Image (tube, rainbow, N blue to C red; front, top):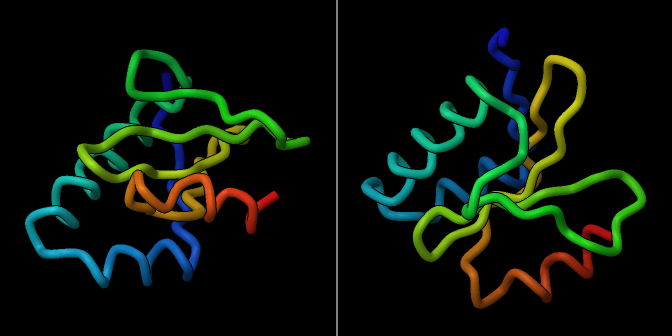
Length: 93
């Protein structure tokens, strides 16, 4: 499978900037893995309900990466602490 391009939105970049360097590094590694194999599957990736366009979240420790997959591209919309996920998803719908 060909590697996908990862497009991280400005808001997701801001989310990463507020995290500790260790946590940001771990999340960045997981995002790179997602680029290598963007097929949403496994116990850490779930499809989110309530979105017209298929939207997913990946569990990375206490944080969640919210993303969509297109042909050859993965769009990362937010990096959110799990306690704020539901509230933030309401804004994305």
